[in-house]
Image 1 (cartoon, rainbow, N blue to C red):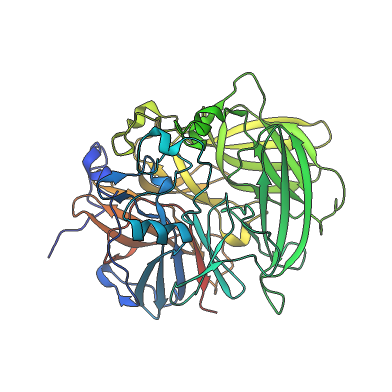
Image 2: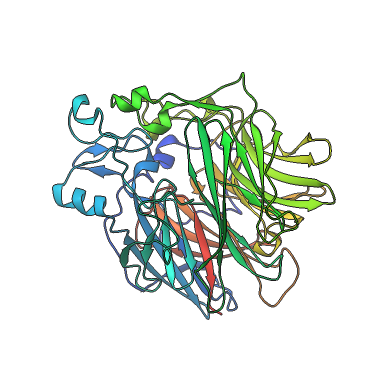
Length: 496
C-alpha cells in the first residue's frame, strides 16, 4: 500500500521542497461522475451529510504554453457528496465560451488578468482588451442554481448534481449582460429574521461605484434579488472581499494605483499594473444595509491601517463600534512579467498577518490589534457566526511561525485568548482553503468538521482530509482520483 502523509508523525521542523509544492500545478485531464472515493485512513463521520463544492484553475497549459499565473487558469469545479459515511466525487470544467474556443483551437486565444498572454508575439496582445471569464474563483449554491464565480464578469450557472454548464446567468434578471459580480459573497445567517446572500459588483476608475445586492436564500423567493443600492467613492478600488454585520457592509479600499498603459500595450496583465501607493491612506467604506438600522443613510468613510487586504475573516458590532478582522500584507503580492510562478521565492513575498480593527463611529478613529503573527490565508468562522462576534477561527497557515511560506497547516485560533490547535502535513504536504461545517445537532461554536483538500507532494496526489473542528484531530483521509492544482474557494450545501 502506498504511504500517505501522516500529520502525527511528520517532523515539523523539516523545510519543504520546492518541487513538492510546484508539482501540484498541472492540467486536470479527466472528468468524473459520482466516483466512490477510497478511504485510505480513518473513518468518515456518519452525521456528515451534504456536498462540498470547490472551484479553482484546472487548465494551466496548452501545448507547452503555460499561463503566467495560476489565477488565469480555466475553472474546474469539483463536488464531493457525503452520504452516511460514503463519499462520491464528480468534477467538470466550466464550459465557458472562451474555454470551448481555446479547446477547439488548442491554444490560448485570450489574455489573462494576471499576465498570461494569448499565443503569438507582443503585437498579438497589444490593444486586445477582451476579458476572458474563467469562472475559476468560487462556487456557491443560490436557489436552484450552482454558480461558478469570477469577479470581473457574470456567474456561470451549473447543474448542482451533474456540474454541467447551463451558461451565463443573469440571476433572474438581476444582472445586465457580463456585469461584474463578486466571487466572494457573504451569507447572512438571519440577523434580521431573514437569511440572505449579500454580494456586490464594482465599476472602477478615478471614481468607483459599488452595487450592493442582497438575495433571498430560502423559500419561494430563493435566488431572487431582494434589495440593492449603489454608492460612488473617490479613487480606484481593487476589491476581492468584504465583511457584513446586521447593519453594515464593510469594504477596505486598498491604497493602490492602476497604470493601464502596460496593459493596453500588451506588456502586462491588468493585475500586474497595480502598485501600492505608500503616500495614500487606505479607507474603510461602510455601506448601510437596506434592512438594517441605518437603511437609506449615506456611507461612512474612515481611514484604515496601512497594508493590503485580499480577505476578511469576520466583522461584528458593539454599540457605536465595529470590529473587522482581516488578513493584512505589507504590500500587494504580485508575480512580475519575468517570474515563473512555479519557482517563486516565498521569502521575497510579504506574509499575510491576521489583525483586528476597532472602528469608533463617533470619533472616526481606528485601533489595530494583531491576532496572530503566523502567515495565514483563507480564514473563516463558523457560518452561524458571520456578522457576529466569533470566538474561534480556522485558517490555512505556513509551517514556520514567522515569515512567508507555502500553506502547510490548518490552525484553529481562539480569538479571545490566543490559544490555538494546529494540524500540519509539513514538510511534503500542502493545504488549501479549510471549510468549517457546523454540526447540526449542536449549538457549540466549535462542534463540527473541517474539510480541506491537500496536495501530497510525496505521492503527487490530491487527497481530502476531514478533521474534528474542536481539536483538529484527524477523522478521515480520502484519495481523490485526479490531481487538482492548488486552488481557491469552495462551499458546503447541507443535505437537509
